[in-house]
Image (cartoon, rainbow, N blue to C red; front, side, top):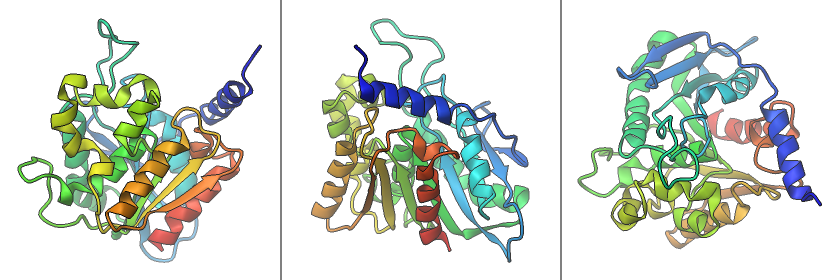
Amino acid sequence: MTDPAVERDAAEAASAFSHPPVAPDASAAYGEHPDQVVDFYAPRGDVAGPAPLVVLLHGGAWRAPYDRQHVTPLADFLARRGFAVANVEYRRGSSLPHQNAEGHVAGRWPETFDDVAAAMDALPGLTAEALPAADFRRTVVTGHSAGGHLALWAAARHVLPYGSPWRLASPPMLRGVVALAPIADFAAAEGLGVCGGASAQLLGGPEHWDARLPFADPAALLPTGIATAVVHGREDIVVPPAVAESYVAAAGVAGELVGLTLLDGVGHFPLIDPAADACAVVCEEIAQLAW
């Protein structure tokens, strides 16, 4: 007997991944590694004046098999709605499964964080050269799943512990963050077994959990003072909405209001599927911060 929730999730994933990749208008490297690259999408149609910039960070549990190509249809969707888009790649886990690990290991410490920090720092210059139609002063960072975690983290670098190589002296110049089904609270995610323990893998294994958690977990990096919205499907079985709810509750305890939109009848993947109504909701959330 099949599980209806699993069947729905599989159908949603198949729809989200059915769109062919969309080639960017320009690409630029922010480092020497092949994964240190940003693809730029110019705003389509009639756009009056410079367009807000959406920085897009893809998901995939920080694992090597999942790269930025699967969100290029979303990048194109946003560009067709008047946004300039920067689709960021970053180093993920090993391309080979590791011994005693279930499949590919999630992320690299510290390289995954090195890359997101370096990409964000390089974006003003790269955007000015590759995408002159973009207004970097109106930047919104968004990301899905593991990319949602990275989006929240990128907006919180100024509250990282002192001594962190990624810490910023002042808040980043962002209009806000729209995190899509993010792995936003590592303790909650690990308690629910999200993505096979990917959060602990990202930190280098359980033995590094306590030491590295304050440098990586969005729920520990609050308040940020950056406008933040979370969009999550109520039927998400990949990253259950309880993870987002835990993050929002942590923000409240820290004295910060984080918007949470829970979508009925929606799982994990419609948020990045241009054919799904949920994707239009995502676009609206971004627009509310950007315009």
